[in-house]
Amino acid sequence: MPTEASILTLQNPVFQIYLLAASIMILKLMIQPWITVQRMLKVGGGYRSPEDAKKSPINPEPHEGQLETNEYVDRSRRMNLNDLESIPGFLFAGILFVLVGPPLLLAKILIWTYVVARGAHFVAYATGQLHDVRALFWTFSSLSVIAMAGYVLMQAL
Image 1 (cartoon, rainbow, N blue to C red):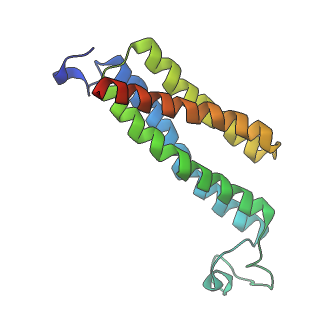
Image 2: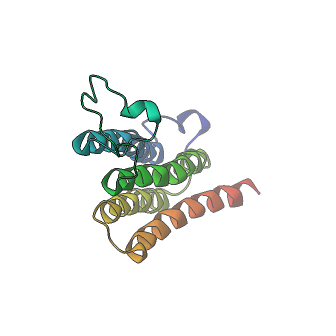
């Protein structure tokens, strides 16, 4: 277990792994809305608010139906909502996990399982795979976070 002074430094390999993984997941969380915007612009629809369908430099030729649900756009929105349900829990559980000083191998397994599973979930969702496929990847990511939180709880008791 690292000494208190070195827990949140790059000299702690567990913290270093967490920093890399957390940065990747934050980028995923922040890039997904941009993917949604790109899709809205590509199809000229899938907008959500009435003012979005008004004439503007971004929407120079408004047309009827721009506020209707567009599956291509909405899939990206759902992916973002799924990220919002999952990634914050990982970020919080992960930093608590680092603070209790887990074994390096355990940290590598749990943290990278989460990241890889979320990446696989993204690909499965983006390509319209069966719910069962997405659920499998979601399960691995969820169990990783649960294991981290459980480890923290056991250390705190």
